[in-house]
Image 1 (cartoon, rainbow, N blue to C red):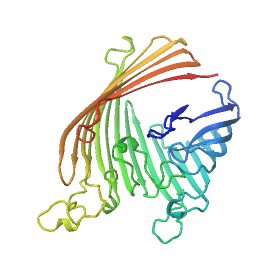
Image 2 (tube, helix red, strand yellow):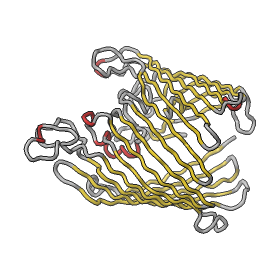
Image 3 (cartoon, rainbow, N blue to C red):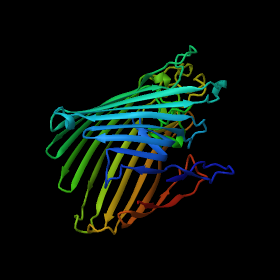
Length: 427
């Protein structure tokens, strides 16, 4: 796999960077081995949904209910301009249900990075950073399952400003409960994220949270603040039709710590329907439709945070006298989203097959600021892709996207389009 690294006006902006290219032995799905090895440019999805690319080697072992692996190599800096450093780590997972009678699974990931000083605030001393993630699953019964997760990070930060590094600290901790009853599924998820957590990699100079990057790229990225997220989901299935109801809420621990719009809390709810309205025998069409409503917290209210601008008759705290650099009250306040997509695939089970997907969306936004409000600003878009398999080892893909820009925030832009193709070969 490869990607264009720098979408800027630099001389090397169109240089192709190899993201992954490696040789592997012993882990092929058709002839798996207990011992396996991989060498070349590769990536790890360890540390609790945290990824890292590196040039090096990985060695692993797997047996009944046990998986072990270790890796080391030079880090590949794809998206941030930081020293490469040496990446290393190990993972261990055990399925106690396969090893005995306890219906539980446990996984521990460790990742380390030895890196030169980042040059920030004249910092040039070499550092070794660490990250540990723990995930566990316990089946209370055939209908109820509990997942827990936690992450400890040593990001070499100085949160209290005393000149000493904080060492290991809690990054995030959470739990999920899943309950099934006949054709219904209930999910409840709770997670607390600390402001010092990382979400890119251990070399990032700041704790930028890119977990929700798709919703934050339009307004820039800022360091996360300590916050708690809770969500619930109800899923009802009957034959080829599925109904989904969901609601989530994110709340910062301290409203006064919120200084950018993407640090604000929010409430989200919606409904989705999926199924085959024409039946699986008529072209194999599978469709989904979703409506989502998201409302952001009102950080401009004097009831939330008081500033000198709240004196007198003003009900907003972002007027004269407010904190310089606080942009949390200017941005998205409300969003409605409607989306529909459909998938159709060829019939039969032969090696030659195809699959086509089409989808579209329309969003309506409300923006707020101390100077003007924008209400009901709508824009839409769509996407489509076609996959064709000549054999089980050769696949072609072409995809296209189209989207309207914001007539308020990006009126100088026209309709945005993108087309890309891919070829996947396995041998």
